[in-house]
Length: 193
Image (cartoon, rainbow, N blue to C red):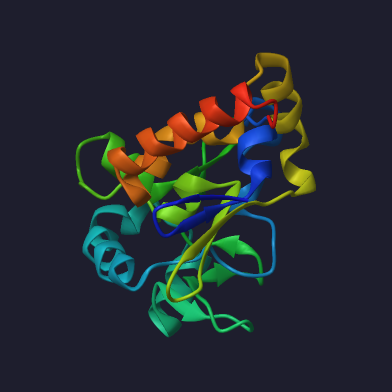
């Protein structure tokens, strides 16, 4: 474990390799699992603001779920998460002409219709952040739907923390990320990485 400010970072985040390979997985992380994507409380309001911009793009099933329970719910572990369709698909999942998933929220942002990219937990995946009150834990989440991303990450020699530089800065700030990089270089000099 490595501590940067009030954040404890698992060594797996520093050592493991990862680079999304959307052509191989087709966005399976948006449609697999038994709960929605973790949300921060302020993100619910941001999603509700974007909702009118993406409403017509969402599936009829997703619109029905949102109409009945909203954009988020509290899962069985007590976490606030995005609403899901049929017990697994995120309500914001859409498909392109090739059957590949994409996030309607992210698409609206990239098209300049919104300033909210997507939930930070989605942006950070495969990193998961756990709040422990006085500090936060940053861990690497392994999931079989991401096997292609692990293989591509190994081929390109891309550590998880480097692949996720932008979302880590979004979550913790540029100064925090700079401290992380400095610590990683020191660990490499010491032969610990």
